[in-house]
Image 1 (cartoon, one colour):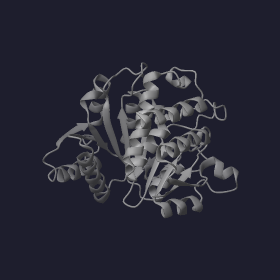
Image 2 (cartoon, helix red, strand yellow):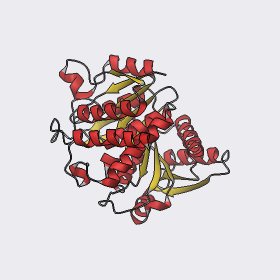
Image 3 (spheres, one colour):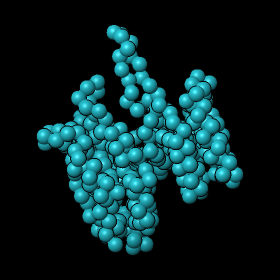
Image 4 (cartoon, one colour):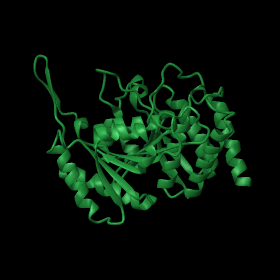
Length: 340
């Protein structure tokens, strides 16, 4: 069976890590994926296009699955985040970020972390509703709707059931924003009635931050709104070695876009030094999403073996390997797994 999948190489180190990912996925799957490459971000702008060209949106709508490298968002001007625009244009309302301790990560302060952050992806303060009231005063609107809150909570409970998770922690700050976060909490409680086999806790955001620092292993799944989820998912990545070790997925009812959640790292772009593991693990999520579980396990097994051995890892992981050396090592490990 062949799969057509949209590939957005991204900006900065994006083309390097996506090329590594493509080689690993093709090797693990036997070449069942037909990659449809399209541009977005600053690379698209350099080619005279908009940051999110219609061609890219059409490709994702047609193929329904996409994977992308990091995209540049100018700070304080230029254009709106392409990541946010993609989520809203395609209604990718669920951001899923698994955070799991990996072998050989001596720089991580914790062991046995295995949690999933699920973030509502389309509203909250990221709705883009802000304006200047008068000189020196800017107002930003936090949009929370019952429909979106019910939808993300239903997705989260179903995801927990399908992944064999037992406990969900609903994160909020209802003491400060009782209407908006209160609505999110009410929707979570309503959904929880249909899942009596799952343990559900309700935890204020500031309490969560403290408890994650003390012992992240006590958590199983975290569910929260857009801005809170953005911050907490990055914090959780830091618990297991950083953004270079954590995959990401943006999922809707009709489409899914998988991504590396780290930045474009322009300081090392084009030098062959980038760590592609986050995007490769995102591809593992993608393979599971399309039903290629065996290929996904080959990818996961190879990454874990690579990290366990520790001889072909990039500088951010304490090694000296470049992107090419790491990729070649993963291909050999996939072959070794298949021969075992």
